[in-house]
Image (cartoon, helix red, strand yellow):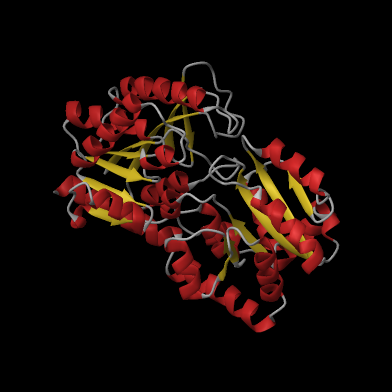
Length: 408
């Protein structure tokens, strides 16, 4: 199979972004397929000496056509939209110069569907579309998109893409349901969640102890609760400030660390400083490559995944959840949906109250000091990561979906 893979934000473990496409591509190549990406330089870390315009590079057998296009988590909506459109137009022209048996477009943004649709129509090859977020439902719900014309165009593009894809992949049960509700038969929709990179994250405990000593000496024997991700509008990482405030009274042995970047980071730092928790029991640090997250999670007692009170966000498939499982670090979330049900069913972590910070801090303290409950959660993480959500399991689902699209 010759696969044309369209993903605006391709990343490797050297970057500070999700590596799903990189991991899936490696496994497809291992199974004898050829994989060519059309992507941008947004999260491509390394000494590739990228020039203005298109660049051709190869990483571990993966061929990449890379458009030099800067990106920042601090970009506002209009700036992001501008970059979405630029990449959509230029990737469409680039993809038409390439040949493939199937084109695989993965969101976000939704505009990645445009080069996929055009390539599919003109070249006469099947399109498989992967839904990582329910666009435009999510940006509409959060108020990011308010213009009625933009909403109508985005809604039309979503429906048109679904109906003109040979197969579709959703990263959560809610995403799959969101696709089916547009009239797509269930048998054409594959559930392939984010997955656990056990090869990367399941490391000797010595790695975590060394990371604590070298990078996090301020923890000083306290229980470490870590957030690794975006400080964005939908994440509402300010929640961790409220947790830290409550923990000062409930359990001084709790230490919170938040690592990442985003639009709200400076505001959260100011809030933490004003509350008197910054650099006391809450430390807010710069973003680091995924390779360094391995050491952090290995040293952490609990991992956090946070979102604001937006139900549309509950359908997401958080990388943080699967990285925590892979590192055998119990996970705590402050939202509902399938991940809440999943954590409660498998006892691999905690579900925190999104509004009651004292109760949440108490729950964390009780959980981390309950040796049997905590040990059982670690064991559950290990079983889930290897037997249910490994990279290999999800790659096999994606490979079958792509082959089904070709052979249909």
